[in-house]
Amino acid sequence: MKPVRYERLGETIYCETLPNGLEIRVVPKPDHVKKYAFFATRYGGMDTRFCLDGQWLDTPAGIAHYLEHKMFDTKEGNALQELAKNGAEPNAFTSNAMTGYYFDSTDHFDENLEILLSFVSVPYFTEESVAKEQGIIGQEIRMIEDNPDWQIYARMLQSLYQVSTARTSIAGTVESISHITAETLYDCHKAFYTPSNMILTVVGSVDPVRVSDLARRVLPKEGGPVIPRDYGDEPEALNARETRLAMEVSSPQFLAGYKCRPVREGEDRLRTMILGDLACDLLFGESSPLYQRLYRQGLINSSFGGAFELMPGAAYLYAGGESKEPRAVAAALQEEADRLVREGVEKDFFQRTLRASFGSNLRGLNSFENIAVSLTEGRFGGFDPFRFPEVFDAVTQEDVLRFLRDNVTEERSALSEIVPKEV
Image 1 (tube, one colour):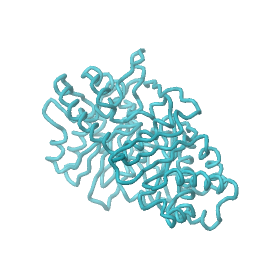
Image 2: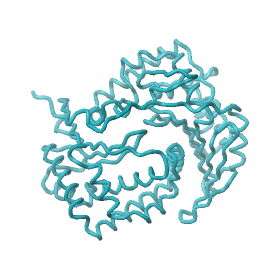
Image 3: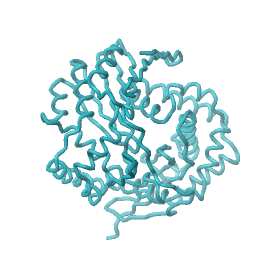
Image 4: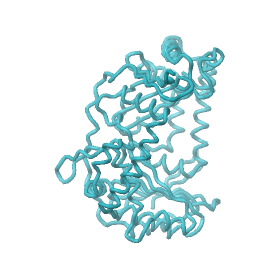
């Protein structure tokens, strides 16, 4: 395995690509007893339309998440239980762009890693088990749809996007998952759960060569083809400028969303992520003039916050929380963005924000999970997340203001509101 040293971070990553195309990343932590393994496929909630064996398939919304649930089933029983017996703490998640399976443990690491690689690589579904899962996930979906936080977020995305699968819920709907069959699940597994579409990342007190040898022994010898995907030809214009829903809430809630320019895969993706995070901190972070003013006026409370998100072919920035006057806060947010672009940021405030953001990235290296997920997201996105110090070195105030000017504009904004039901 090839070691790559990051002197400024004090980290070394061992890298290898197996003959089957699987990429392996190992970050040794010899002074720790915990070991963390993350096995991920570049397949998520947005990947509903793809080409397999020369034929374009349209699969139901929520199928990636559904497949994640079903992957723990094996002919022998349940992989979650097997890992737990060995003292591991396993779990999984599905995002817009990937599905990851992971565990951490102190003992029996090799045995646990073999279980992880085996059950993720060898699917086992029956029509009976698939039908049973529809009821379980359907109940989860109904619970989610009753959640105001989920509704306000989902409706914001549906306002921002017209055709992109970014507007589709990762869990799908009760109706959409009713069309999932064992055959469809096998098709999706065949397309995306191939070694060449996956990454294994291990962090902890482990031998990199031993990890590589185990993966080479357990996983299929063939990697699989590149699968073309279709996320929809999204136009510049918004789908809607505003959306409002009455629910059982005690006070109004809102999200002001901005449809940002999408970013292609590659090194610029890391730079844009950093610029987007800085733009959020400067515009509405807790130390920002806007946040302080709105808080003093009683227009926002501690629930207020937001973020910048990047997805395949899509990007957006949002901010919101509880407020008695959501429209006034949304208007103030846009006015402040326009003012920053026009007048710039006070120099000391910019430097403090830059240092704080850098420190946050640095502290992320204390988390094994954060290291593994970041490395995986970076590799799937075509960039090296451990190069963030060099990116911060080159970032200027003008770069952040240009990001605001290009993305945080009136014509790119949509307002999502949840209001109390009238008695």
